[in-house]
Amino acid sequence: MNLQSGISTVSTLLSEWYEVHQRALPWRQNPDPYKVWLSEIILQQTRVEQGLPYYQNILSRFPNVRSMADAPLNELLKLWQGLGYYSRARNMHAAAKQVVKDFGGVFPTNYLNLLRLKGVGDYTAAAIASIAYGEARAVVDGNVFRVLSRLYNIDTPINSTEGKRIFSTLAAELLDKEHPSRHNQAMMEFGALQCVPVRPDCENCPLSAHCLGLAAERVAELPVKTKAVSKKNRYFLYLVPTFEKNTWLKQRLEKDIWQNLWEFPLIESAKPLSMERILEEPLLRTWFGEAYSIGNALTYKHILSHRIIHATFLPIRIQQTMNIPTSWTKVPFDKIETFAVSKMTENFLIKSLIR
Image (cartoon, rainbow, N blue to C red; front, side, top):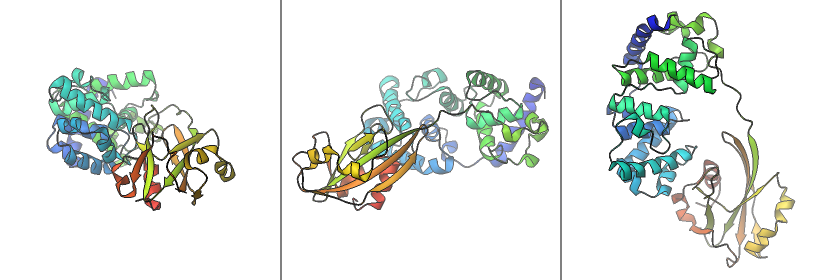
C-alpha cells in the first residue's frame, strides 16, 4: 500500500469504525483536560476494565486538579492501592501541584506546556492536547504500535530507538489533522478492540484489504519487541509485631519499589532465609526483647516488571515495646486500612487477623 495514497482511505475507515464501535467511557463524554489526564495516567500499563473503577473513585474524591494538589500524597496512594506502578500516582500528585503553582490551577492548554508536568511524556501530552484541545499531535501507545506495525508490515522493534522514530513519524503522517481527537481515539480503540494482540479477527477487519502484515501472513508475529531485561529476585522478611491490638508500620522513603507506601518492618536478604535462620536473627531480640512468640508465617511471590519479590510475613506477639525503633509508626488494628500499602501487603492483611 502506498502511504500517501492510502492515508485518506485508512483514516476514513478508522473513523467510520470508531463511530460504531467506540466504548462509552466517562472521559469521552466531556473531554475536560483534567479528566483526560487522569484517565491517561491510570491507563498506562492498565486495562480499561481494571482502571475504570480507580478513575471513578479518584475523580469522586478529587473532582478537580486543585483538590488533588491540596490532599496529602498518602490519600491518593490509598485510592491507587492495588493498581501497581505507584510512581504514576506519585507523579500525578506532583503534577497536580505543578498545575496549581505554575499554571494557576488551570491545566496547560498545549502540548509543549503539558510536557512540563511530572510524569507526562510525549504520548500523554499528545493525548491530552489532541483530545481536550484539538491540537494536531499524533499519539503512539502500545495499541497504535500494534496497528501500525501490522498495517505496514514493519518489523523494527517497537522499543528500539529506531522503531520509536519510525512509528512516531508514521503516526504523524497518518494523523487526520482536521479531526485529531477523533483520529487518535479511533487508533487507540481499534488496537484495543479490533487489532488485539492475540488472534485478531482479521476476516472482519475494515482495514484487511489495506493490511500488508495480513497479506504477508505476519500478523501473529507483529509487532516485534526486543527481549526484556531478566527479572531480579528479591527476598523480603516482614516482621509483623502485635501488642494490645496495635502493630507497627514503616514508610518506604527510599527511591525503590513502592516508594511512599507503608509496610511492616522489613529485613531484606540476598537469598531465602530458612525458619531456623529467621529465629536466630539478632534483631528480633534487639527490638522485641526475650519474651515474644512467633505465629505461623505466610509466604508470597509477587511479580513486578523487573523484580520478583519472595516475601515472608512473620507474626510476632510481643510483651514489651520499649525497644521499638522510633522510625516505626504505631498503628491500631482498626486504623491500618487508612494506610496505603502494596497489593502484596494488602493480600496478607486480608488473610491475617490484623484488620
